[in-house]
Length: 396
Image 1 (spheres, rainbow, N blue to C red):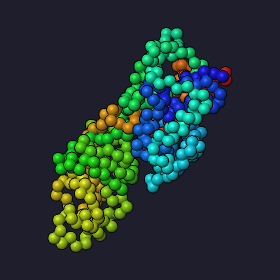
Image 2 (spheres, rainbow, N blue to C red):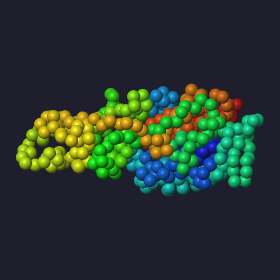
Image 3 (cartoon, helix red, strand yellow):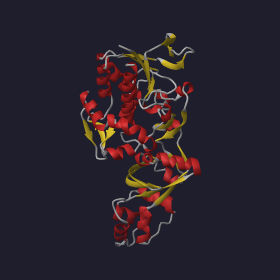
Image 4 (spheres, one colour):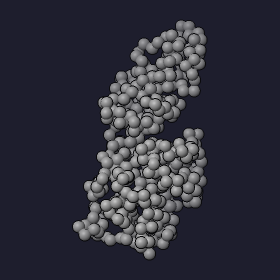
């Protein structure tokens, strides 16, 4: 039996701990916060989107540049395996209308309670308020604890310390001070700044449902939300990486809104050509196309206060409403972060090349993905890969 330290009590770390304990190793989880699973519980406030049911090739493509490295890990632990794992903890799942997978309980606390019970049964020790501070000069792990600083020498170590976007929940990226080959952290799945008029700012909190957003050669369906500072929501998050990079490069980026993606421009024109009479243009849009006040005002922000009255031009305006994004919300307000330990700094088993016996998992690795279950899925898959890598290394 080998002694393994898992540093970080999020999904990646806890899953690595479960895997290694089930294989017979003595596992201790170190968590700097007063309890484990805090980000998982936060995610559960939105229903706990575990994974996604889409075709596997489309699923892998969501990881963009990191897809080639993550593919074998996701093949080893695909969405079906995560669903089976959750159901094994007594949490049946269902597929929502968007293809996202949720536990039927629609929250994280029942799953986390069952998971912690399983870990206890496996003999996993969890030490909270145990803050990792790197290594001593002779290679031992340093921890700051309420009892003072301690040093430990496990047979293998799993680092699963998260990204840098949830400092209040323990993920602040401070660990980067003790590791090399760390790409700069940047916000991911974040909101974008827009220079709204005062009228549009008054719609803050209003949703834009059933839209399509286009940027470059990509178009995504989903929802967005108007905020006083600009825009946020799933459709924006799906494009957040290329939009962020374009803003970094050019200072701004323009995204195109299609407010009625299920209708062609011709169909819109035909509807709009039917007797407006003495109605105001806003009333005509509301009655003919069921456009909401926030959608009508978005059109005015995009095309000017005086929208075209000719049905064909107005239909085209509804299909392509350009909104200029002028900045990104900061890392502290982002759902996740890009950056972290570069993937070329770890081997195929996620072991640090510079530190044999130290394995990495979860969002502290340099990959990013949109919301929709992709973040949790890759966290679990890398947690498993790191645990299996550690087990293989311990055999030598």
